[in-house]
Image (cartoon, rainbow, N blue to C red):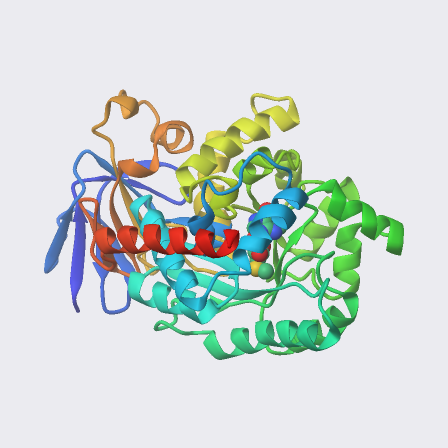
Length: 430
Ligand SMILES: CSC[C@H]1O[C@@H](n2cnc3c(O)ncnc32)[C@H](O)[C@@H]1O
Ligand SMILES: [Zn+2]
């Protein structure tokens, strides 16, 4: 057995307690063998003065959008997409998506993210980048049928199912897939009725934006006389393996629907604040039994891909939304960043436990802003930032050691991404 010992650190356990222990990893199976002391292994990774946590899981993103970071800000969702983002994305080539994905993966690995879900296009290029980077991912082709003729619309929906069928299990099983209609208002119901049963029959989960803004809720209520999540359920899109992004404007009835169906919600607080989409009732959903994960959404609406930042935002916004300083407490934040997102995406990671995948982040605690150390769960929720992550491990492999990413060439990717983004914008303005 090729073995790795993460030694000398404090370890965050599934019940949110912290214990001084080493973590022994079987690098062949990619799983945690033992958490304890007096353990030995072929290789060691130093974690003294550090906290070993489950790797963070970014439950909803559009990672290649890092190329549009800072390109368009300060507009609400619909105007931002229609005036700026979609015209720019229409000029993105498969190679642009490839370099954008690598840049986003670098950023995520450097902030302790070991798994993510992504909805975009030219997705085989994202598969290639994920394979090289070494993280875990649930990927899908995002479908938009509105504004397209039937032939193009049908081809887009088919591409999402075909991608999901072909790539599930890629990268030695680190990649799984989902059928991904963009939202309930950007995909025609006839396409959902045709393809959702096919995805279901193949056991493929469904992921989409839901109830993000009032502009998405009102047309469904007006046209169909039901709430959006009733509409989703009527079209077979509210099952336990499914996960929706946002869930901002949900009423009590929809919260109960989500809880009964076991459909998870990926909360994206930074995007919801930046686009002024609204405040998701996270504490109410959690109290009703809805599984909640955390996501960054695309970097153009955030403007980063760090789950530690997202956790702090979730806590702050959750308290404001509930008008209660006790809402969305630190333990819930850390649960959402790890187990919540992992379980929503169908990953077995998210906890440090014998037999579970060795997807881990090691946080350097020897920092002025992490001193003193009364409560390390509090630090993860409120004080730690992405650059505090010292090592990142996924599937038992070291992806970053002492802040050097081992699987991707940082300098060359950053240089190529800058050039690629410049060329993309010159095509957009020509
Ligand atoms: C068709 S691929 C996915 C599509 O989603 C767009 N997108 C980015 N952020 C958001 C958001 O907050 N709500 C809805 N859609 C979003 C992205 O630009 C891609 O085109
Ligand atoms: Zn999104």
